[in-house]
Length: 562
Image (cartoon, rainbow, N blue to C red; front, side):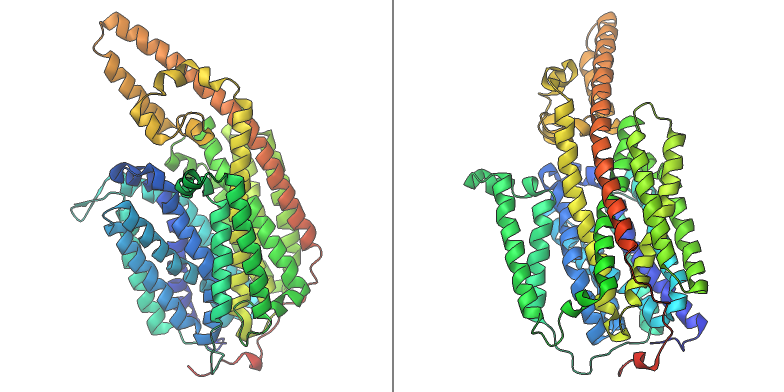
């Protein structure tokens, strides 16, 4: 370990690490505001899912592998590699001349993002004693909170086109902006961060890495936008979505079984199976997975609720999450400070999971008539619960293992939480789709929908019998575009007829919007119920933890040769 470093040296290292992690966290939210412009420029709505999934896919696969490699070859060289890959991937994304090039660049960028994510949390264990880690893990948690607010705002500002040094920005700048920050972070890490290497003769577990890659990649593709990504394959083969997912599930199970078999024999396994013999490790991985599911159920769909019910733009809906982010930041930072003083962490995980479960359960009371201040209060307390739990999971896991194993152990938390989020998105997405369709009987006969269904612009968005299309048609920017198009078409009519036509159209659009909002709200209630149950289940697991007082630094942790 490097507890002997000066406070100044540790601060510089942590600032550079948090800067690189900030880029990764920012990229997950900033891209959402640019997707519309990207699709419009490349005329590639069908590729929209791949722009997001490609990054998610490579990030998920990279995290556990990068964590182990950092234990073998040193945190510094692996993290520098990650920052460099992320910077190059960002530059290539911004320079992409077509949607295929963008997708490949995003996949490459995701590799860097996974490496950074895996190592940022682990470095805290390298630099600080267990008692000190709480305050730093809390600050890292706050970084994620800040990025979730800044991302949509900055992305919207850059995408809308503003002048920077005489250059007008566009969606490409949501990627270009990463490059100078990454270069600065790379320089600081290169200069100030010492190496940390435990294996004098590292041996890479290629078989384990390959099997884990197959299992994780197939799992992500099986649950994230499967019907869109594999549409051509299903059309060509006549294979149903259920049949495709059964095949992919079989591949995941087979690859996982082989992975377990070979990991038992591996000299330096990617994910040591002995970890699962540790009682607290098993429980924390369960908490991370369930928490990932519940977290997505609250964050992702609250944003959609604000857009559908309050008519908020993507930027505005991000601002409306400020109470949650504020609660998360306060809880992350304050709990970290207290944990560092008392050396106990379990009580914070207990309180946090209970508060989060209760608040998500109360989200079921939200209706189209609910005032925003009521939602804001729930979000503030929900953020408080999330902030108590998320950073502490890393502390709990790091306290169970030797310094030489911190990379693989800590990255496991990010892996299982990420898998939980991915699975949660798939489950809740399916629930939302089926719920909306069930609540919108005879929607195809709606006058507004019938009047716009033949429009090329609407057909480009998707089929009007699809729930996602119905929701998209009710977003403020799309409604405004449709309204402007109709107004342009009727402007050739005599003035009285023009007014009458627009009045009728506005009435139909308003009626359609009300139908969608109420159907969406009813479907969302079921999602919040499931999300609350998963949060509650994670609380039950937390009570089973066998807490040990946070360990002190030991001579055993001395690093190997640099």
